[in-house]
Length: 197
Image (cartoon, rainbow, N blue to C red; front, side, top):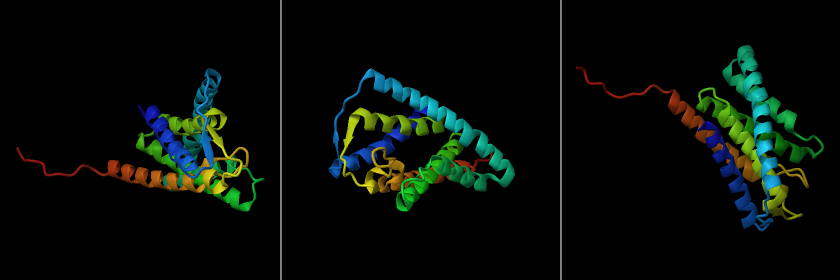
């Protein structure tokens, strides 16, 4: 159930980005897909999602929590996740957008693990779903215009990362706020008058 929830969240984020791209005229819907593309996407989803979540939200976050506490550990793992994934050849503005976007994604994935009571499956679905979904979009479903602005599709030129664009950043920020509220609400003890018997 957590894996499916993560996949649905990834689909939602990519749908927002794709919708804005299409509405702004920065791309065309091709809708071309075949068995090979789908097989590659599934392997990417499970391979990247499983491996990276095991490392970043599994092992690394647990070690950081022991060393510096839960809150600082979450911030540190998101920072490391961001630095490891950033392409430093993009120029300062593009690189900054990508660093912030990947940091927010790291925080969203950490909150997802909290919401799933320590399970990594929701993180695997969300992270793997984003990687696989963007792969499918770029390789058959969506034709990005060569002059699509990087603030919209994200930095990276021919291989943009939508998490570093304005739509991705805003979407991740909104998702993080929703998750924080949900996690805080779940942590509060249930209140209500109990009848004495």
